[in-house]
Length: 261
Image 1 (cartoon, rainbow, N blue to C red):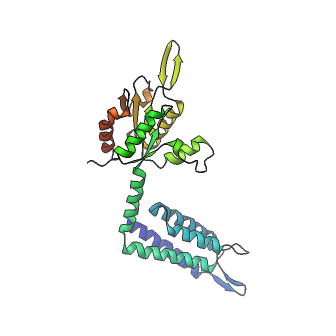
Image 2 (cartoon, one colour; image 1 turned 30 degrees about the horizontal axis):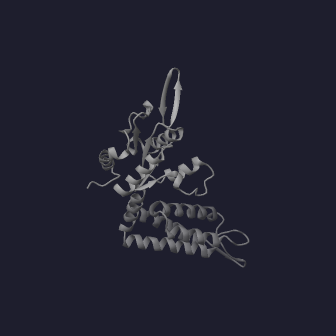
């Protein structure tokens, strides 16, 4: 949604809130919202909060609207007060004025949010600590990106490892998986080495969320890989991931994670 459409949408809410305000009735017991407008106003509050969050990320408008609404219904009948509707209308009007005067603010905020997400690269790894630490260092120092290693992140209120993984994974726009020969598998007479199950699961999750172009697979020699991952960018290394650093950089530039220098 471009700036003009966002402003038009906010102006629509401004008009609707003004209409609700005009229909308040005055009695000897006070001023009351129209019975039909009560659920409509609550719906508009939720939609406005979502709209501001979608276009701006973390912002003061959503916080102001939520605060005014909560204060407005904290009365003995739990009905929105005239003042709360009036104050939320003022917030919407102020945002319309600001975005009309400076429409670049919306595109700039969106670009900042996109950049913040772009800079986060999730590191999928198994037991080989030396290898994921090497990859983390390459991402941070060589590429100037922000590596996300799950075991280094706080729990953030998550109760399970999967919840924690999804909490951090959804903030990243790219993932690099390191497959090392951690598990020995016997299939009939064949014995082979493969990556840990969590590594396979996490790589599959990112393939589903970002598509095959959003992930890269680094394979240590001697590690078997499922044919399902055949369409993913793969780099094999013998001892160190740095053996493929030039190729990794080229592919990150090709998918837009890194700027070409």
